[in-house]
Image 1 (tube, helix red, strand yellow):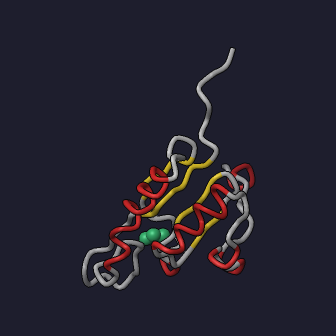
Image 2: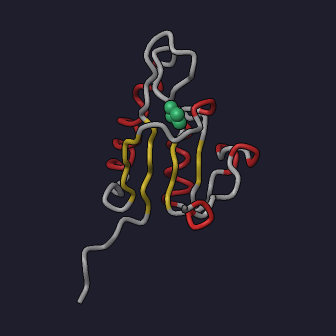
Image 3: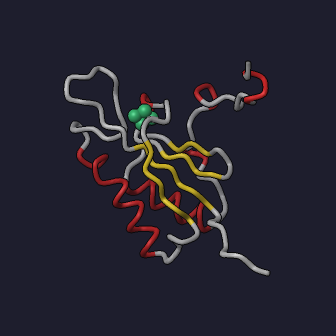
Length: 124
Ligand code: FES
């Protein structure tokens, strides 16, 4: 028996927008008009490429890397892309999502993205 195929990728796009005057930066900002268009751009690009069923875009709130925003997280792989704009998203789709090769130059610096913490080591 065959089931409905799973998506190959989930692309989590932080859509957190800090209120005006908030000192903390956010991924969607009034100071960066392009940042307000990136979720729509991501979805449209995936649709135009015909891959939105297998590379699913998901809006999220804060992914805790606000200083490097706008960010997306690609799963599987725990790949965090930072300081994004439309052009960078296009390359990520073409080279990583379709081509299978991570776009290293847009990946968060290792100093900001250490190894994951296993929940078993923290559970009480
Ligand atoms: S606001 Fe996007 S990571 Fe925090």
